[in-house]
Length: 422
Image 1 (cartoon, rainbow, N blue to C red):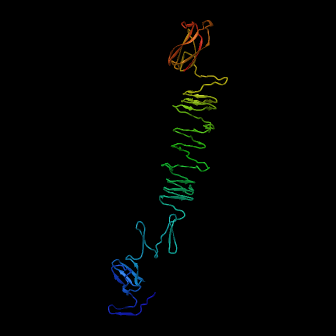
Image 2: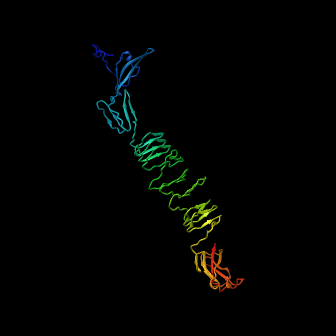
Image 3: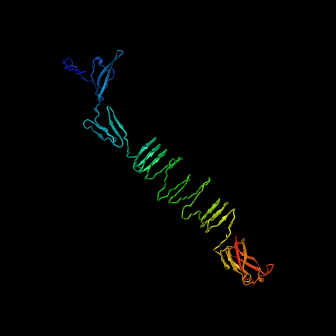
């Protein structure tokens, strides 16, 4: 609607004024719906609230049940229309050519202008300059690059994260459930370091699961269970605590069967116990401890050696089951000074000999046999017996010429073989 100025109007109080040019109503308050000017305000009338510094324009009237309502709209405030914007640090952005652009970033926020709409959205790929925290679900379809820390307290699914598409150069902390289909971690990785959750790695796949590195060790604090097999191709497997291998089931346990190096079993102070049978195709050796068969057999294909310890059959026998089997000792005494030997030969002098050996005890069983007669002659052969025993020191061999063992066969110079059984 257009109002023409028309001719000047002459009034007694105000003189002349143009027709249809309204004089603003000056007040100390804002107008309300009952401010109709008692029928004298017309559409287009301006109202100035000089106390608040705001101006209003009467845009229409509404009549209902005989009551007329004035509809006022605010024109502006003292500061005028919007001229500037500012950021978090209160730095002001002034318009250029009457425009202030709200710009996004290529990797974080994108803005799109439409008809009456300015859309702010996330781009297809997002790079956060600092930490990224989510409390529900973080889903990464193809790549994820994190410069410092990625902290996830909910469920995390990383579909493909590797050195080409993405990497974790800082710390990846996941307290919920995580599915890592392809992950390359170049820094320190902590998985399930607290709580009672189960950590599963490679349980559903058919490929190899490689754990460990070429120079350091792989430590397992608790138990390590391998359902099909545990293989160390180049390094060793070291267990400092209690180790249980194939404790149940009918599976075969093979140790060192395909190698060429030595297989060491046992320790410096304790015994090596075998509940069932122990078979060694080439040899069985212990450097300091004992070889103990509690109820089963110990089978060595070529030899069985206990360097410093004993070979003990707790409930078994020492069986020489093949013709030609023999007891062989590489340390046999041939004089009266026997050292620590339990076997030896000695030549009687005047029908007697004292064997000095630390192997004898007060309860030793000493077996004697005449190895050769020498120049004694058959008529002078006496009966052999063991005389005084001094534990850990010596024992005496006597040859008697009388039946009551009271007279030595002083002419007996036979060679006597002796063996101590403790």
